[in-house]
Amino acid sequence: MLATTLDALYLGQVHPMPGDGRPTAIFKQPVTTAVALGIDGLAGDQQADRRVHGGPEKAVHHYPARDLARLRARFADIAGQLQPGSMGENFSTADWDEADVCIGDVFRVGTAILQLSQPRSPCWKIDARHGVDGMAQFIDHEGISGWYYRVVQPGSVRAGDRIELVERNADPVSLQAFWALRREQRPDHAELRRVIDTPGLAPERRARLQQRLEWLQRNT
Image (cartoon, rainbow, N blue to C red; front, side):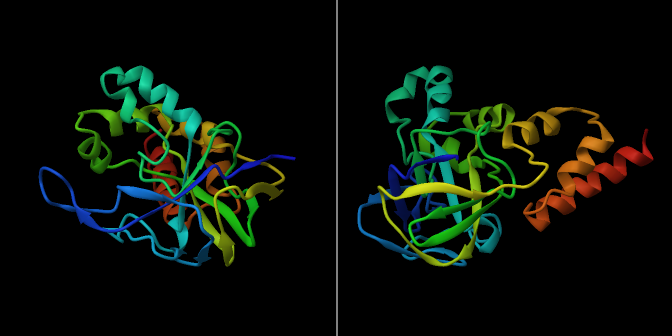
């Protein structure tokens, strides 16, 4: 049974990004008390641009600390600031990475039930926060962006809670496999269809993959 501990829980408020003043909630702070978790996310957690962050399909962002090791190796000059919480995540765990979890996985955390809906798409705010160019691009290329959950059953969570897998698709697609397929210039049509049809995949992500498949079918 796949299980680990929620090592840290982070919430953030919208503030101006240092340097350019654009609004961001990427600077999140750890909390140790229990936090209510509803369909739209954690109580007290904000998102600056609701078009691309937050909402039911991106209610909670989980970033595994294992991925930070690869970032520290690539961006050695700022390795010290690449610590849990620095990616704007809500959940941090020492265990797991994109090879361990699959689209549609259902987890129990505290009294809540969550489902992995999609990988995160890294944006410019990661570069702006850390004062470097190319970090978001590296994260995207390497497929180490973490993932989002939708909330199946609201409840409460706190740092130290056990995160336990309770359900997995019969034909699971890991996030590592998702990113590998995405990097292919002309992916196998059947494999792309398999991802599109994976139960639990966020509708917007499914629609984009369907558009890609239809383009490939027209241009093959």
